Length: 404
Image 1 (tube, one colour):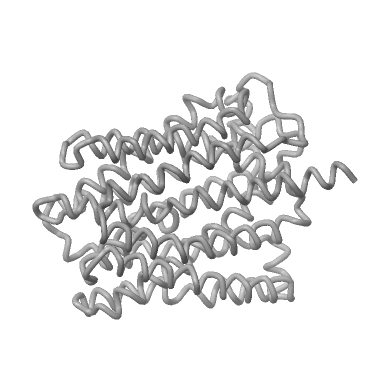
Image 2: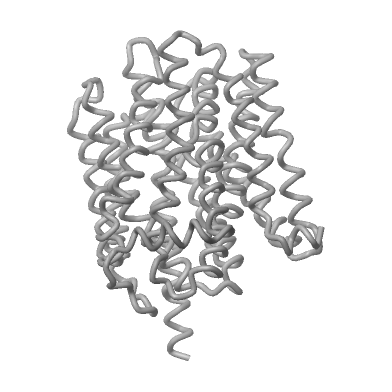
């Protein structure tokens, strides 16, 4: 009984820390983009694109270079990630946002935070949560995250309008400090890995296992279309160019999160029915391709920009990415890495695959902006959106496909 009680406590701490991390998401996402574009004389997204490219390149490199840290000091790394989160906020408060070095400093600090947080976090998610409880863990956790994502963007939007981005960062600084304190309460119930890094063995295992290879392809497709992709940034840029203030950005982000809750509740009710998962995943695909077409045909339409952004936040960022993709990746690892000895090495390899998808699309977008082809970036979004087709196919297990 004590083990089960401990397991439930750890689930709660994992969810709580995740909620705090996501409460900063809008601040370091669309609000940071608006801030960087706002301080640019030409309202250019160049600085924000450079920030993202440097951040993701560093995340991919750090995932390999500091693999020994996340493997041998997993719990410490997870906790220290909050220190880098605090450092980011201090940099935003103290540094000159118009300086050339600003996006680079913020990017490197953010990369360290992400590398130290997500690798151990996914490890703990896999080992502290059974496959039988994983869907409930992900949906309940994501529902709480979405509630916070409804509240925080509006609060941050109001704060930024009334004060400034720099002063609002003090609120995020306090959240990061609380994250550090809360992470100290986490006590793993499973033995943490202490073996030396064996990247060669992990590479060989992935090379000989088609299911583990599927992880890499899913990650590449996530980088092309979902988390941190050029597609997501194009959506945000388009909204920023069609609304009036940071408060509007916060409101529409909150609406996307509210709709995410409804979608997650509906999905949880029908997900176990025969063939229902494929029906839902396929049914939500079409707007991902059609909405950038509409925005390209009607570039000045505020309504189209809002619908595009809200749908992307609700369906791509939350449903496909946070629930479908992450759950599928963790299920594959749980099934094919039973002894956990190479789990973090495989996680690091998957981070590199994710980085490839992100950086390729972001560099292409940056080149388009630098060449004065911003009016065609929606065409690039249309091309990128086609990645949803192979992604959905890979996100479904063979059992789910047979049921359909």
